[in-house]
Image (cartoon, rainbow, N blue to C red):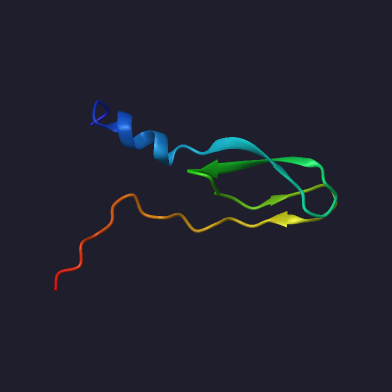
Length: 64
């Protein structure tokens, strides 16, 4: 269903983003998905950007 993929596929595709290393202050390119880091990335100084847990797109309603 490629036609229906348009809206949701943008949330699944990682986007390169520049983040500042908290140790040395250099700019490091990390891949993010909806603002969260998707894979482990290491700065040249040795600091490791850890992947962050993704939040689900849908929120299930709790029935009382």
